[in-house]
Amino acid sequence: MLQITHLSKTFDSLKAVDDISFDIKEGEIFGLLGPNGAGKTTTISMIASLLKPDSGKIIIDSLDIDKDLKKIKKVMGVVPQDMAFYEELTAKENLIFWEKLQGLRKKILEERIKYYLEKTGLTGRENEPLKKYSGGMKRRINLIIGLIHQPKLLLLDEPTIGIDVQTRLNIYQIIKEASSSGTTILYTTHNLQEAEELCHRIGIMDLGKILARGTLTELIKIVEEKDIVLISGNFNADQGQKILTPLKDATILSLKDGKVVLSLEASKRIPVLLEEFFKERISIDDVSIKQPNLESVFLKLTGKELRE
Image 1: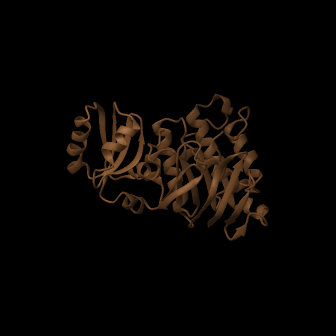
Image 2: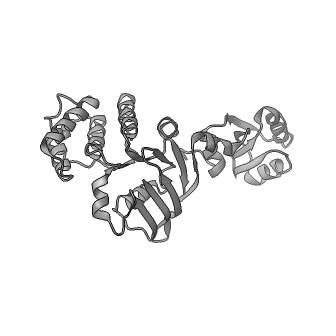
Image 3: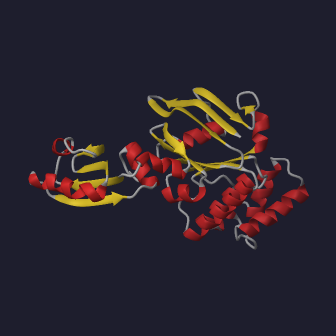
């Protein structure tokens, strides 16, 4: 459904998206996982034709975005991070306005408005102006606007930012249902749990590049059977390098003053590792161990925690 080939975008000296390629199958939820500034929103903006790429090719439903944009807009829905509606209008007025742009017939539009308001728990509130809605309610309307015309491809740019758990679960349910009905979804997030919960495949993105992609099982294989160990203490980077370099089976992923991230078999090596620090009279403040999961994959690929 979506093929991205060698896509790049630069702003001044910043390479926001750096020669990325990936594809999404019909009905699949593909997650772009990465921190703020990784290039996720820029990628979605280019696919949505809001930004023009410096280079690369975007194919949607076998149509080239450079040649067939008008046709592509008919099969695509976009849910941006920022709210995309008129707060002075009611929920129903917003839905009618935006979806008439898609050419939906009145009867079909009314049926779908009723259906999605019920699915999102907003029935009875449809005639209130959106400025009176809570943040979670606004997020649900934002999602409905992008989804109600039942697009073949739905672009979701961090659609659950700043919402409560109940609203988040409601949005998850709607997204899964859309996928089961055949809608292909590109979902950007910096939330590890969301990526694990929702996505059939995940692309890990940082500094404009996609570092790895695959199913959760395939990605976890990247860390093999080793754990990711984070050690913080009273040492500088040179001391850490001197202590850790001679140790076998310990791979340094990231090292800076006071903090090191390693890949190793923690149960066997932690006592030996700490002993080496103590020999140099270095105090250790904290040791944490990450079992093989999506977080440990991100740590191994980037050398940093996702929240950094």
